[in-house]
Length: 327
View 1 (cartoon, rainbow, N blue to C red):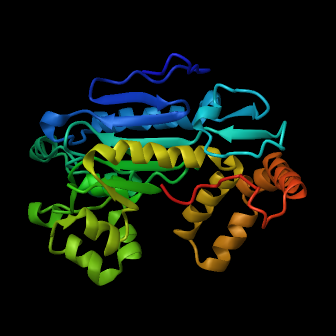
View 2 (view 1 turned 135 degrees about the horizontal axis):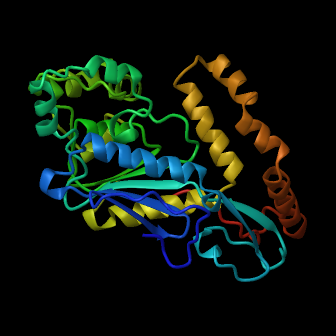
View 3 (view 1 turned 180 degrees about the vertical axis):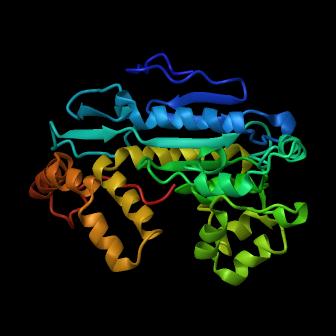
């Protein structure tokens, strides 16, 4: 449920107990898959619920931005990891609320699709997998092929991820994994197919031969391997640090220019669809780029930097605008 100090233009969609919707910090949405007895396997109904909440989050005005004046305390400044010299006053910064954290209840991230329900569908003679894969807008769990939202998504991988769980992770922007996490695409051992985006994504980030180990052999890998060899995990931490680390990433995202973050994510999405020059041109002419270059954030950011630089020498050590580079 929303925190007491969080208010919305429209209330979040009502979800079943299988999806926990929470706001661990102001302007941070957390989705927790809550089927621990079923290893957090995703059903078609749960997938629709996730899609409904993400659609609401994308459209909700109160989760878009708030202006905060740095001269006085502000209810939103606890989420800002930027420190401004005492010489700087009255710099108005637009803070966008753009972060989604996805995790699993208990000691499992997600075991993929609920195979029991899948078997029941197959047994009934309803064989629609090809059509479903071809026409799915957002993919597995309404996340694996989600490509319209410019709000970053963080996977907080609290435990093993299999099949569709890996599909979710490969379409997240940042991934924090527990040291105990294991990743596997065992579809070839079940006679099915990882068909919701993970094959091209894994091939691009890991390379054809390395990706083949997961996809063709069905071999599980550790969190360290996922970070160092397969390159789809950003940070590997102790189990108790998974969510705190994901929230630390979220704070950094919120402290950055909202227009810059969203336009940068759009550039990443375009890079998946086009060659370099075409992606650059499409990005330059996009709505997000137009909003960035013609909006107020670029003016405010440059003006703030200029004001700081006129007060302090860049080499004096007196500039204390701290843009965090590591957690």
